[in-house]
Image (cartoon, rainbow, N blue to C red):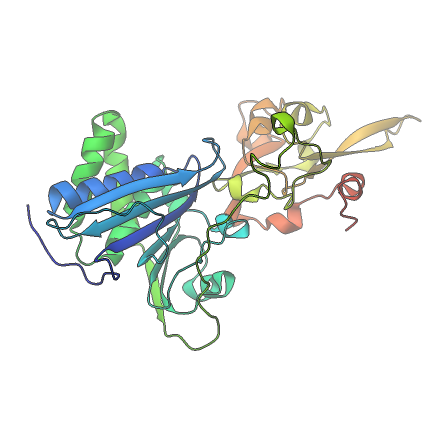
Length: 347
């Protein structure tokens, strides 16, 4: 066991990390692995805990980690308000969650994105600090593992005080013990996250300002909700956007191969597929598949599994699973005009 000093701490003596993610990406486990590494491997004291709403895939998750000297007690259990290191597991989270709240202009931001640091700065409105980008989804797909070990490798690279071998030991203890066949690819994913990080430092120049931290509160609670939690408002989804729930893979529609059988619409839980009536060429009408409304698509890929066209031959399938970052989803998205008007959006 070795002990080194922390590079910076807050007024309570803690180095703090906040991970912004969605359910299913493994941020909670990543926080636990990181805590185990610094406590058992390096002699620090630490704490890790997560906060989330309904415990299901696709919902926002925050993992909080505090690190301090081994002889210091941790007697605070509130969320991390001003992280020294912010780790964003999915750039889509920023659409619905104020991920930059409390992030100061000297913090380090690690984000799963194929964008470069300059693009990320404008997207997140970063006041200053260091922005590091890693294509965690791409790496995780290539190595066939979850992206949390990729993000751990990237985060570890930004923390000079943290020896990566202790993270690897914790990964081996946590993942290797339960899933021995997945240990080698997870360790490789960690190394790639560590080595393929693209970082750039930005001096505070007044372009953007620090966003103050505030605990978000739900509009509805036990004091004002309808009896039994009944949803009484029609069209109640405010954003009408499920894109943050996707984990980097989308169903890609190939209209030239489609037989318009409707199996994709039958299995889709969010009615993402748009069908419109048209001339069937025989003097009658037929419903034709126009494509996907990606605002409502959470990437479950049930449509890919259900499509009967080209079974066993990916080059002939009418719907294929593709990497989202390789396609212009906004341009591919098909809007259902009647549905938009019904939900109060006539665009």
